[in-house]
Length: 411
Image 1: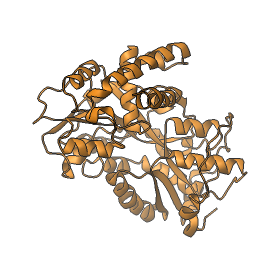
Image 2 (image 1 turned 120 degrees about the vertical axis):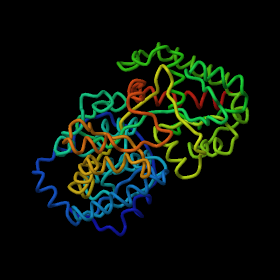
Image 3 (image 1 turned 90 degrees about the horizontal axis):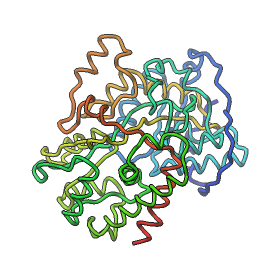
């Protein structure tokens, strides 16, 4: 089915956004079409991809390289629907599900993971499972925990990966010669350098991941939180986390009376010299900001000795998408060697591959191996040997709510 493209983006936001949960897990139905038939059906379709639109590099990659290649190779028009938070899209899908709108939806593809995927999957808001039908899935290592589980939620074919990310700390060697190499050392550094550190206010994703690092630090082990959550143990660890962050607040930028509203604002504070650190859930962002002239070329990144949190990011198709064939072709192309290599170029985005280059022919393996890294981007060996898993999404949700109640409002 093809949509009429003129009104999709306008009508999407016409409805109000509300959220509620219906606890059920059911597929919209596995797609039984042959791949060549899917590709043929996709020709001429317009795929509306709703995604976080806060990165100029990501937007340029999507609207430039991807859009051009999909139009040339498959006759697909790719149209980005930038949003501040994909939860807006999830809320709209809940409304449509309850209203019985089973087809003709305004969203064909979503950049999604974490609690939003969990909500979609458990409320039957997704089309599929579809990932196993994509030919390029053979390039993905589905044995990796961060691939087959999305924040503790089994993917089960309802998402397709398209990139990987890991938290890195960002500092300027001209200002800080020896950065604190553990979370404990960072906390001590903050106390000894009042006003020189900030983190975005959760539920901003970057601010939230900082809270999760403190949670792992005070609870002593990331692995213990990968299984079913012991609520009593979580409550104690969460209470200790809020206590540490509340005690830390007076030593933060502006004495913790206000927090940066976004990673962009935090990066601006760092670039302007108001704080001495930034951090990112994108291991190549510092290099990207050096190329863009925001950061000086003395900026570098590092990971904590105990590790930093890493995950995989995915795309999914809503249950009532108008153009499922086009969405599947886009998801498959995102995993192609050429799209993954282009995305990893530090001059383009610098996002790390979701595929395993070792599964490619020798000439492609060589191209990935020879690709230049940004000056501030760590090597794969150092990153991969210092990775921590994300906790289940219910922990993330509780920590964000608890931070607001006990740290922000409790000051």
